Amino acid sequence: MRWIAGGVVAMMLAGCGVFGSPAGELAPPFSGMTGDGEQVSMLDITRTRKLLVVFIHPDGKTGLAALEAAKKIQDEVGSERLAVVGVVASPVNNFELWEAKHTPPVLVIPDPDRRTTLTYKASVSPTFQIIDVKGVLGPKIEGVEGDSLTQLATALSVSPESIWPADQPKTNDKPALDQ
Image (cartoon, rainbow, N blue to C red; front, side, top):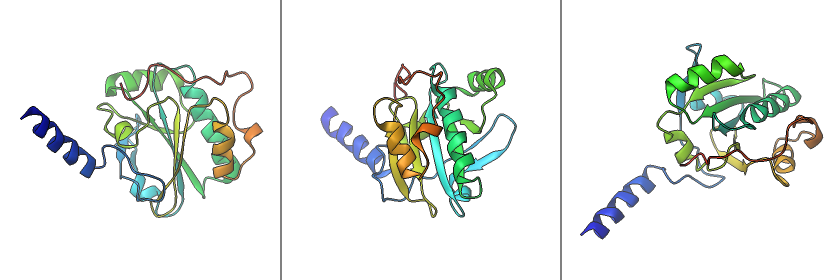
């Protein structure tokens, strides 16, 4: 009986998009409030421009560097063509402390229950998810090791050398975002 109940729950979650969607599908909508009280909505942003979502863990060393890299991409592409939003897998209280300490260069919203992080299957910090105009999922690039930054730069038509700070190591943060 437990098996059947578990299967029913898994099917319900899959139907809700909890297990993510592949590139080319409509992105699951999300929204949140920044520490300054600004409402951020994926649906509003993607009506007129691409969105680069950066999923990070607040305890990781490369999270802030990933947001800075995303800001460099936005500066190169143009903010009228690309918006950047950081999603921090953290309770609201911890998020406010983190935001006050680090002053991120882009809009960031907390993901206290990790619903958005899990929906987008962001399992490594950082994970970059591109959402095209009209809300269609583009490539998802996990981490900053190996060829991932080149993939990100290519997907957004920017120079790979220009986006990652030279003084930052290219290692993924632990713990994983989905734990």
